[in-house]
Image (cartoon, rainbow, N blue to C red; front, side):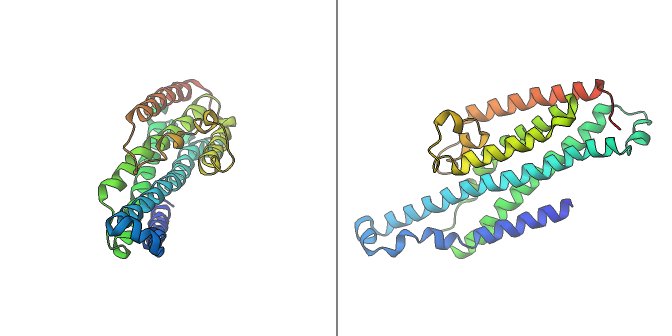
Length: 240
């Protein structure tokens, strides 16, 4: 399943990257704009259009990466309820080691999926564009969005450790966060509601520089939630 996820993300990224040239030329079809701005001005606008689209793709790819990572982590609860872990837990290893295995694998898969999708979009986009987008813009998109992935994963870990029956709340929050980020401006939602989504704080990257403050807050909250999840999982009764 991990291989299918990664291959699917590569294909999805390449499909989006193949239309970068069309997106960049939206303003290039107007002779008036070409006369007013000149060739360099038109190229600058084309680049901004593509970078804005890359930022949106970063959010979409992050959402899919979160889904894959959360599915891996929540699979631990499924195996716990089906009794598959009884033989595993009889061995001399802690529950923390078992949970860490799922969490680390989920984070690695999410990171790989996000990076593969962005690199595929870059590869396909640079083939069709006359003025390719630099790798640094895609790297900034990855750095800006991965803390959001970690935050949602940490919420899942916390619920698994404390009360796994309501872990579906994380899925609901993920859906709401994506909706208010994607459609929030169209629905004229207040700014405070938009800020409830982790994706809100990085939506302008790579057009704008990364603001490290919200990213540090996300990672700090994620660390606290993961610690809570590990402590809870070590002490709670296993479900069957």
